[in-house]
Amino acid sequence: MPTHPIWLSAAAGDAGANAPQPEGGQPSTAQRLPQVLLVEDNHINQVVALEFLALMGVQARLAKNGIEALAACAEAAPDLVLMDIQMPGMDGLECARRLRAQQREGKLANFPILALTAHALDADVAASMDAGMDEHLTKPLDFVALRTRLQRWLKLPEPN
Image 1: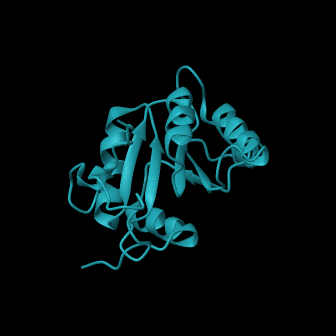
Image 2 (image 1 turned 135 degrees about the vertical axis):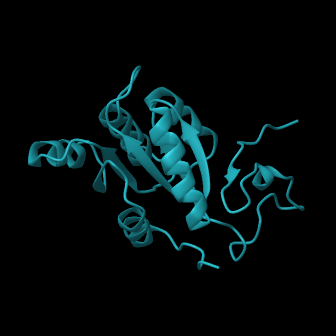
């Protein structure tokens, strides 16, 4: 039996998005919610970001470091990655470089990667861009700013 990634159905607050699909394997694009991989090692930042994503109505998945992020993307490519920079094991810059290399080699679908860090100096932004990030967001996360940035890359569900 094939394994499927567990996406948190942010709109419903559960893992219902992992339910088996009818023949063909995928829901229609009209009903498919954007899928975001959050790569974050800090528990408080995880809770805040996942709650923000839930309020935006997207499906979210969590990886706690770059190594987990590479595995999660190989299992099921997300529509967008929110990548912390400083993490144990493999940091976000190295992870972004490896994801971009896999995309160039045709081993992985293309998707935007947004850096998520407390570091906001010009050198930090440059390091993110050099590693292959598409944007550089700073912490603490602001809901409106995050939603605005995500809307550049994803079609977010309309708020209820």
